Image (cartoon, rainbow, N blue to C red):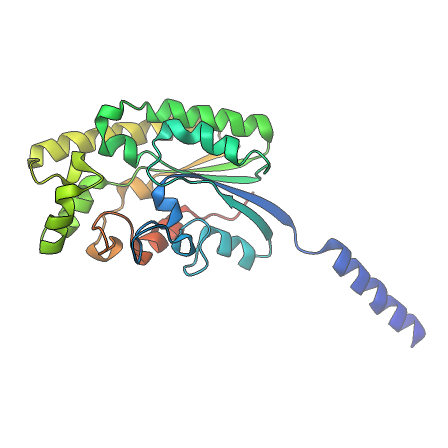
Amino acid sequence: MLKHALACGLLLVCDIAIGAPKLNLLVLGDSISQGYNAVELGAAPEYSWATGNKIHSYQLRLEQIGYEVTSKNAAIPGAPSSWLGLELYLSRALAPDIALIEIGANDMCRPKNNQDTVWNINWAVARLLEKNLQVQIVIAGIPRLSAVYDSKKGAPNCLEHWKVSACPAFLSPDLSESDRNANQLKIDAANNGLKELASHYPANVRYVKEIGETPIQPEDISDVDCFHPSPTGQQRLSDAAFAVPN
């Protein structure tokens, strides 16, 4: 009886000592990763595809398969890809095991920003690898912004929102269909560049092509501004992006 009790006690001590595997999760990006305008004006990180707790987010999935996750959501609403350096600086205290990057829509929404999206993301990947050679990096494709217009163009409230939209390159009422198609080709080219970027780091980087290719449905877009993802859209992002860590 005593031997059995001692054995159980030792096992309990071992379980406590081992605990859940720890994992650091870093999120870099823009308003999408902050759940911006998902349910009301402003950031709603609880609906973020990356770290939210009101949808089945990337972080929640990691926790449900047994990881103890320490996360930092460094995404900045309105950020172009050139702000990745700032986001890395602000999150310098965290050495990530997994980094999620969803950025580039603001580069494409305002082409006069003249951002080199692929170069900027490649630079961030190199910095992350300098910090941890084993880091797993997930690069989400730039969403198909022309499909945002197509999915909501029949809603009168959206036509009003788009008069002052944050994405004039796709949602301005003055644009023709050929204008939008031409701008979408720039997104397609950037996504092809991101796919190629990932191919140079096969052990570390995974590009999620589905985010840039999957058709957008009306329910995926927030009714708050007819542009950002709704909770349903955020969930679709999480569903597409998640994979069990290596």
